[in-house]
Amino acid sequence: MQGAAERLLEDEALRSNLTDDEAKMLIHWAIEWLESRVDPARDQATARQTAQAEMGRLRPALQEINRRLAATETPKAGVMSDLSSAKAALRASPDRKTLIRSLIAQKVEAWSKK
Image 1: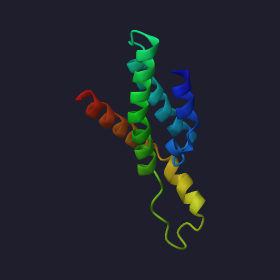
Image 2 (image 1 turned 90 degrees about the horizontal axis):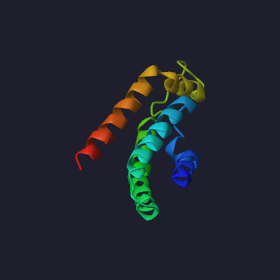
Image 3 (image 1 turned 60 degrees about the horizontal axis):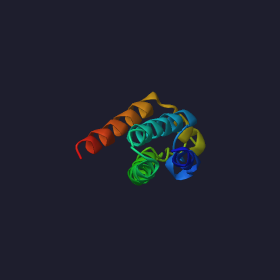
Image 4 (image 1 turned 180 degrees about the vertical axis):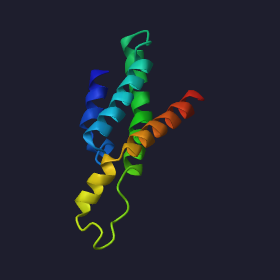
C-alpha cells in the first residue's frame, strides 16, 4: 500500500496540469480509494494483487482527469499576453475543483457498477 501511494505521489503525469491543491485533492481520493480496496484483503498476497489491479485502474483515470484539466485555450493577443498568467487564472478557478469532484464521482459510479 505504501509503495503504491508513493508511486501516485511521484508521478508527474498524474498532476502536471493541476494546482497543488487540486493535485492533493485528486491524489488523496486515489489513496483513499486504494485503501478501501486493499484493507479488506485476507492476506499480504491478496492485498498486493488488489493494489496492482486498482493501480491499473487508478493511474489511467488520474491521467485522464489531468489531461481534461489542461489549459487548452490560448488567450487572444492583447487580452492577456502572458500565457502562464492565463493558465494560472484558469487553474485558480473554483469551478476546476467542482469539475474534479464530478470526474471522480463519474469514475466511482462506473467502477461501482462493475
